Image (cartoon, rainbow, N blue to C red):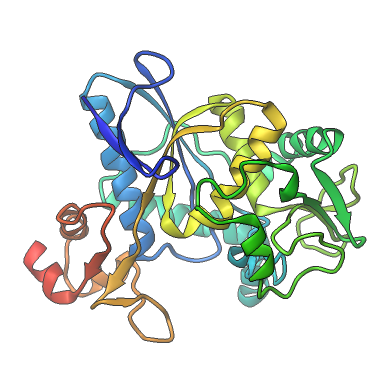
Length: 327
């Protein structure tokens, strides 16, 4: 018997796939504008452990992990739909095309994953190669009355139309609205209504759509790619705890509104990676990528071992002393 903590129900539940011996597993993949840090890799190690556990128990797993190579804004974690696209920002900084940035950092990510003995997902879709699928879902949402224009740039999802909004994160819609501290996009009914399509003819990556030339919002990408390869209902969706709101909450809202079916049966979220008890950040000087550990003489598998000494629902507290012990 396999039991998992389900973020949606806030309970430990017995896991049984929708189809008797077949598991549909989706992982929120990296935004490939820079190297993945060790906190990111800790999350993918846990996803790898989950897949291996399912397979060890005789289940056949179809694992899909996306590559975000457009649409992830610098302020999108705040649901503000403001800021610059991380891919475009990196391209300008490194004086390369977004495609060159994506190709380089995608390869770097999978090199790190291989060094950490993480199994390669069966399907690795790129956001830029699935724009048509995203447009189809947005068209359905528009037809059903879930979308509207906020000004003349943002075609957004109306969260007030989705009755279960906030169920995953436990956030109350009215309290969210009243307590909003966002620099909101003019024309939004609610500051947390989120972009499905951003009209921008000057963006480095842009596509034709019924809502003008532009690019998709970050949240619609995962819905489109996961459902294309796994169908309307997934058995398990993984991600970091920072993805719960707004990203995964928004995935549920748009997916279930479009299909009329339950989107995900089990949500598995991994806690943050701390460094010496503090949040990892470049400004604190405690921000590490796997190569930093290798440069100090540590085997990547020592880091994997360290990850497996902590429960995935507890913060992994990285220190050089603990890594030394793992080595």
